[in-house]
Image (cartoon, rainbow, N blue to C red; front, top):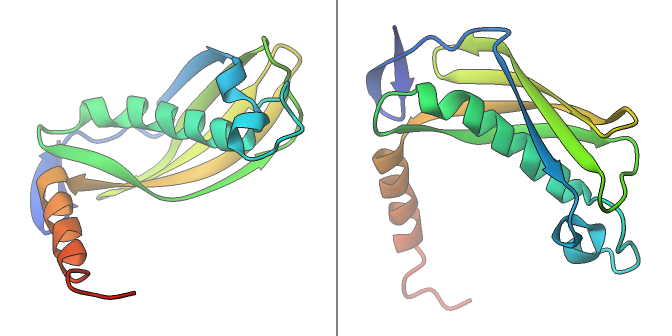
Length: 150
């Protein structure tokens, strides 16, 4: 266990192991195609936003279940290159691996494959936060919009 600052408080969180990894898979369905993400002419190709979403999903699965009750991770930034096209019906595998862990910051390396080879790669930074504190801060920001006429 290590001390981690999540939001405005210190928590005891398990040390996230550098080099720990997880792989998830998904068969490309019509809902995953570029047609559903604003590219009206690519109804049979896997969408880049869906690739990013799968990478984030794998990152959350790898880390969040190790956290103390009431704490989650949130994405701070992601950089992804979608390098090769994948067709409807193929299977996507996404591997995420922890490259560094420092207090409440986790840096992950992400690689995506289909049956032929690598289709994308990137990095993703996640931050450990107290879920209730985060929701409270979001509500405070939303409160500032009341009675605003845009």
